[in-house]
Every structure is written in structure tokens, then in C-alpha cells.
Amino acid sequence: MIAMDIDGTALRPDSTVSPRLVALVARLLAEGVSLVLASGRGPFGVLPVQSLLGLLGQPAVCSNGAVVVQSHVPSQQPQVAQGRPWKVLASHVFDPNPVAAALRREMPEVLFAAEIETGEFVVTGSFPAGEITAPKRLLEAGEKLPDRAVRLVARMPGMGVPDFAEHVLNAQLQDVNAFVGWTAWLDVAPAGVNKGTGLTELAQCLGIPDNGTIAFGDGLNDLEMISWAHFGVAMADGPKDLLAAADAHTSSASDDGVAAVLAALAEHYQIP
Image (tube, rainbow, N blue to C red; front, side):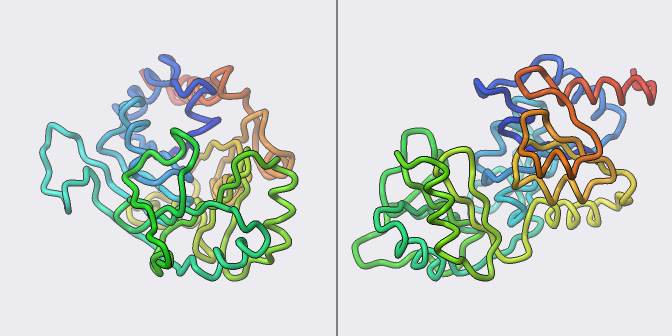
């Protein structure tokens, strides 16, 4: 099983995928290799990238491991719950309200988006355009966040990442897994849940042995996934902790780093 992060790994900075990567994905799928996207994105954000890569019909680890789904090929016209083109294989929830309260004490103007099990978001205000692309509902005055969420996003548009990270640290979040992104964006997952645990669940479901796993990533939320994989590959522009944990490094997404490694694997195993 080959697992790939999306943003900064499978996707280039302009949100496109390289034709070379698409061709290699098709070759590997034809040989029965499982290729899985593992992302902080929810299912609504993951499926369009599956489509770009030719991976519709494959499983995916979403929301930093809190949701594992099996997507469907549109032509198969599956009977899916509430019309969503995926089946949930596993999910983990938590109450985001204590986390939100702690962060709000540090940053009174912070925005929140709670992702629920159906993939939709409940938001406390307007996020910058394009950041929350899934269906969403604005929280009403006096209404608290839903008490069952698979992910909580905290966002402070206009704040620098170092200041934001310091505020998050000062909030002393308890019993959750939290990751600061490349902007003033925080992803919060249930305690003990990450991409590595999501992939472990999926590998067990598919009967894939521990030594049959490869993972690619570029961010700190990929650290557990890179450590989990039998062969973990970090993108060259990843943070130093990720680079130190990886078994190998490859070039950045701009330079088609994932495709370079997959091409070498295809050649080594003589995949046509």
C-alpha cells in the first residue's frame, strides 16, 4: 500500500497534478497496488484529488486519520447514505467545545469550523475564500459547536504563523492531537488519532502486512504516517523533524518528487 499526502506532496503548489504522476498511478493500480490519499482534508476535499489522480473507487484516510472512507466510481451509481459518493469505513469523534473555549481565551477573534461525521462543517464566521469548500452551516448566535466532531479547524486570518503557534501553545490543549499548518490554521483531531492510526486501520482491513507500506508527506501532520510506514519518504521542503524521521527524501512537489520515487519502484519491480 502506498499512501500519499495531498497538499505539497501529490499536489503541486498550483493545485495541479503532474501527468507523469497520473500515469504512474495508473500503472501501479493495474498491477494491484493499493494507492491511498492520506490528508488533513475531509472527504469533500479529498475526492476531487482522487478524481485528478484516477483514484476514485479507492479508499482514503481523511481529516488527519479521523475518517477512513471508500470512495465510489460515479458510473457505478452506488446506493450511498444521503447521496454522498463514499462509504465510511471508520471514524473517530470528540467534543470540540473545550478546545474552542481554550483557544478563544487566547484569541478572542479566532474562527472555528467543526467537521462532523457527514463531512459538512459548522462554522462560527466567514473563512477566507476557498478554504472551506465542503458544505457548511453558520452557527447561530448563542449556539455551541456540535459535541461530536471528527475535526476542529481554528483560523486567524492575518496573523503570522509564529504568533499563532505561540497562542496555540499557551492554550494548553488537552486530550487532542493538534497540528499548526503553513498559515495561521490549526487542525485538531481526537486524542490518539493521526494519519498513521488511520492507515493502520485501513491496512488491517485490506490485509496488508507492515512491510508492504510506503508513505509520502511534507508536513508535521505526516510525521506519524512517515514513522508508521515500512518505507517513509519526506519531501525535500518538509520540516526538519519530518526529514529526520523519514527513511528517504525526495524532491519537492514542484519537482515531481513522488513521481520520481514511484518511477524507481516501477522500474525495480519491472512494472510495465
